[in-house]
Image 1 (cartoon, rainbow, N blue to C red):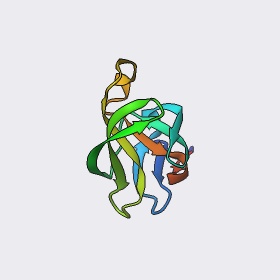
Image 2 (image 1 turned 180 degrees about the horizontal axis):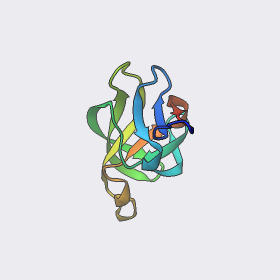
Image 3 (image 1 turned 135 degrees about the vertical axis):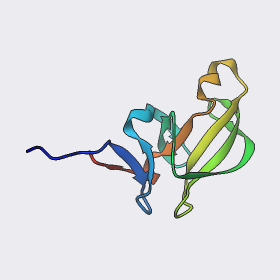
Image 4 (image 1 turned 180 degrees about the vertical axis):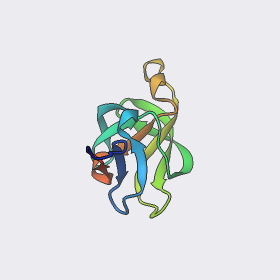
Length: 106
């Protein structure tokens, strides 16, 4: 009999709390504060911080940092508003830093 395998997940690298599904990855070609980052359509088990305007490589955005709901590690941010028309697709999406997440069920 084959093994039952759940969905491929990304977890907080600090406490292993589930934070997103592999199916929610939009792009792996993003830049975070500390290196490579992934753009996700959804995230779970996170807490959002205060919103703030931040000048990023691609222009001015309103963002809110996101933390793991268990250990409070800052994992990345959520795009709340993009001021440039070409960046509007990011609104409502999440950046999770590669160094802050690990794979599970791969």
